[in-house]
Length: 595
Image 1 (cartoon, helix red, strand yellow):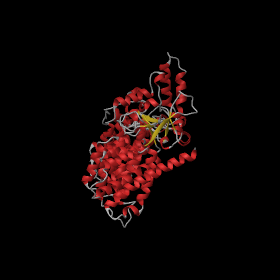
Image 2: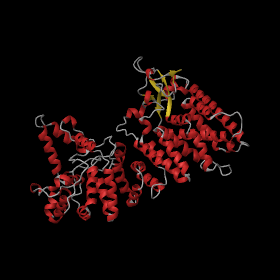
Image 3: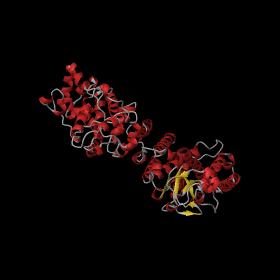
Image 4: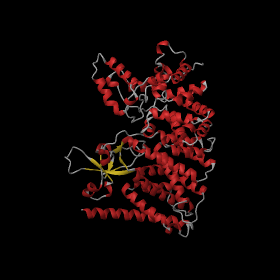
């Protein structure tokens, strides 16, 4: 029988309890004296290895727990099964030492299968027995590499209700239901991704989870290392997709950038991954590598907040300095935003028949943008095209064709002022005010939206307190934070639903303006930069309500039924001015009534 040497990764012997058992494990260790710590660790590890199926605690997180049942008794009662397991061990690691004959499954490569919980599954042993040496080696390498979880942005969502063993079991089900050729191809692909896993990161992960000192013991399986992302996203994909073999063949024909991008979207949401794979075509060449890579970058940059305090929910956090409006910050990189952006992009790709050049342009342009700018770019493109081609264009209007509509959104999304303006829809402007009910000198608080009110009582009653905001953190003029890329201004992030409503109204207005401006033959007309600057100079509270009113007006036929393109542009400019005036007036009246 051939002996397979599994190389490329160091042996990893990890015993980790799920979260629910952390307290008891830590209690055992804390009771050990300093001199007897090593013995306590050995005893604890041994007890975890030997625990029976009935003693295994409920699996509540993606953690490396002991198997569902020690195979010792099973093998004692079933010599045939033990023989198959022994043959598997000899194929992987060579002849079994006589001293280990009764517990060979605790050693070497078999230990990885033991951790994975597959050695008590007769169907697994039958499948392993039927594999050739190359496929078996790929399987062993894959199981060993899966011990290191994906980064938290994938693990927290995908493995919330699935343990390490559960995920391995689901992957084994895929392999069992595949024919020999399909199984070999899937394992070859998984072994390729397993080869990307950082051996040092896996070793560090093991050490951090089960250290040699009490202060080092951590039962937290989530890490920031990204080397296992492709492997775990691939396993998640083949488990969820209807045709694992077709997906594997598709990935095999794609370059590394496209594979990572597609797998990242699968890691974000497997249904979206299937839709994107369909768009990419059987050979994966129907979408540009740059476009797939850009979408993958958005997903990879998702930030996970492990704890959101009730204080933050009730009051809100102020962003300032390098974390302000035009900078990347974690509030702009939550999963909801990535999910919405990728979903919008896929919906658009499914709906419109873009040329190869148009797809290449979008991919290359997106690749050069920061994450918030990518989001703004996608908002302009997806909302803008629908504005001109679908939702708000009545049948009796002169609709633009796709090329004409793309030309309009291209002017918008390639304008840095417009990108910044659209990105700014994510935030409230704020004002610093002294709170009369707080002892003077102790603190100054910022109130989002306070600048649109004309008296202190109204501001206090109708705005949220922002934590972490003081006068020395902001560049203030007339009590309002000043916009600017580098100044230490204060911004308050809106809720996701608020943002989507406001950004929709803004893009609708920008598209209407640029469409009318490009069609107009007037000699003297406002530039796009000047229009964007006008909107940017408004306080966010006034701007958001103004654009809501403008957007409502655009929906009516009164705008599109103007006689000429020139009068359309003049009408739109007048509407913006009128709605801004009415919004300001209404705020003043509201403030006066509250006095």
